[in-house]
Amino acid sequence: MRYYLIAGERSGDLHGANLIRALKERDDQAEFRCWGGGYMEEAGAELVVHYRNLSFMGFIEVILYFNRILKYIRLCKKDILAYSPDVVILIDFGGFNLRMSKFLKKKRIRVFYYISPKIWAWNTGRAKTIKANIDRMFVILPFEKDFYRTFGYDVDYVGNPVVDAIRVHSPDPSFFMDTGLRKGERYIAFLPGSRNQELKSILPQMISLAKAFPEENFVLAAISTVPDHLYQPCLGVKNIHPVFDRTNDILAFAFAGVITSGTATLETAIWGIPQVVVYRSSSKISFFIARMVVKVKFISLVNLIANREVVRELIQKDLTLDNLGAALNRILYDQEARSRMLQDYQEIRDMLGEEPVSGKAAELMIGYLRE
Image (tube, rainbow, N blue to C red):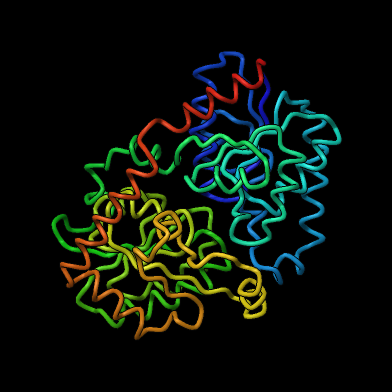
């Protein structure tokens, strides 16, 4: 069968790649074409457009780049029709993919959605759009099945692919030799995100924190697809060590982390690393609009899954050096707080389960396609 996958960020690229491998194991005639990144290309898909060209976030940013986004939507539609896939698999990336789903429905092309967009956080009415246009939805958060049930839509919960990605990752024994870091020393992971807007807003806060803790070592999880100039400000800071494309190795050996809200917060929790979650929008207007429409109490996946505060979230105006320093001190030196966080992490792991997620999703997808 011919599969066409669309992902719009690093995590979707990673999980899409694992899904491709699982589909290959079960379909020896499988062919893949994608919008994604290097992970999916390495897994065997023909890459059409890299996600870095689509990394717009925030209401104002989307408006500013609307014509460019429309150009990519037209290109994607044309490319799908030319490829004539048996199924299009949409991966998160709701703003783009929900537009595509309406087009695909009209063209009678089968559509699966792997990793639901976070419509339960805001604009829940989009569940009706999903029900109308998506043939099967495969969700990765335990509460999403019940959420869609309230709209009369039955979805498949397959577990969380973050668990898969970490399970198959063996920390590289040459990590310290390759990076020049000293084995046995304590260090703190900085994960500033993969989008340009995130880096511009959040990296300066991390740099200020490192300067305020000169006795600590910080390892910056850098990504080679991000423009070099965005990392430039941290290069002169002696206790910040940029390491490219080794996020899981960084987390495997870290003592604590300062993590930008997103999938990385859950990755950090699964690795068992106490963390502080941070986020700041580059546009105050975008953040104001988001505050008006967001319907959930928390921003991090860790707290959303637990349905309580497990990790401290410092968002927008709360992201100050004083608050960040206090939160970091707590997870570095308060043993009771560290232990409690690690116990809460274990509860989250239990909720997510341990069944191989990519394999389960692939099995279900192929089953539905052959019905």
